[in-house]
Structure formats: structure tokens, C-alpha cells
Length: 252
Image (cartoon, one colour):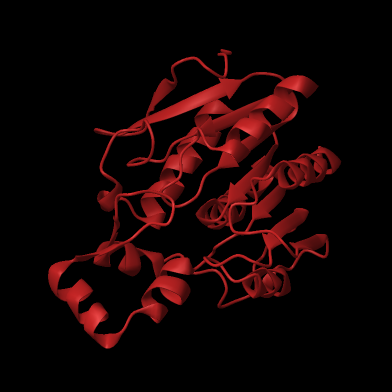
């Protein structure tokens, strides 16, 4: 089933009370799956750029919203890394066919790595855009003061200001606890697919050095890290999108 980029999304029943909004374009294999970031949705510039790129090539493409994000059901504060990874797995298994190139932005890079580890036969290659595996532990929890940690454990949630919107977002203790069940950078990552990483050196959310750590943990020898000296976390300028298109095209 094919829809236009401006059409209303379709919905995938991913379990009791869980409806995953998605846009799917059918086409050539391998397909491309875009995995968004923490509090992002499938209408962002990178997701739309990937779909337009795939349509121009006649390539299959899928973009979707995790539960609690965008047009999917649920509340953001009720989500965890494990639940969002389940959403991504359901979308890939039920809405795509054959091998896929996973393109993960920020948290989506973590989700993509979890998918590739769980379903290696479905993943042709992986592209991480400022990938953020383990961010709940290493960037959120590690950055909190003792008082803030105590408040999070006592009240179950703390609210953080967002530089991308007016509303603060909630970080739950459940998110932190669940994240610890999915940490990837403590041990070697047993992946054999090609991996490409793009990271801006002006990224104030996810330090670019973490991409080098990820590259070191990956067992596959086919890993390339591209650092964009004047790039920020979003990497959504036209020159950044052009680099993303070239990177994905080489993997296809």
C-alpha cells in the first residue's frame, strides 16, 4: 500500500491499546526504515528527506512514530527504550519485506542497534545520525545531581526544559531503569552489517566522542564515522541531508 507524503498516516495495531502511526512507500529492495529520536516524530526534516529520496529512486521506505510520539497512541512519559524498540520491531516485521537499511537519528540509533542485534538477517546496513545508545544512563542519569536523582526516585518523574519546543518533557524513573536493561556500550557489539555514523562536532546533546566509542565496540570491520565540524545535533541543514542521502545511497 502506498500513500503520499502529505496524506494521513495509516495505523498498525501493535498490541492492546497501542496504535503505531506510519507512512509506507512500496518499492525496490532493500528498503529504508527511518527511526526517529527521543521526542521526535516522523514529520521531521530527515525522515521526510529519506522518504523523498526513496521515492525518487523507487526504493521501499517506512517511517513511523513510536508510542507516545507524534500521531501514535499513548503518553510519552509511559514509554521506555524497551517499549519503543518493540514498536520498531513490530513495524519492521509487519510493514516491510526483505533486507532493510536502518537509518536511526539520536535515540533512533540506539533502537536501530537493538533491532540489528535482534534481527540481523533483516538488516542490510545501519546508518546512525548522532546515535545515542545508552543515553538514559550515560547522559541523563550521570548528569543528574544527587538531589535530582533522589527526586526522580521519590516522585517517579522529573521535567526538563526542551530546546526544541516550549513544553518541558518528562524523564521517568521507569525510563532510566528500563534503559539499564538495554545498554550496548559496555561490551563488544556482535554486529556484522556495514555501519555508517554521521555526527556533528557542535552537538550539545550527544558528544561526538560517543560515536567513536560506538565504532570501537562494533565487531564488524565495515564501520565509517564521518564528523561534521560545524554540524549540530540535528544535522538537518541541506548539506547535512545531502550527506545523508549519499551515505544511504552507497549502502543501497
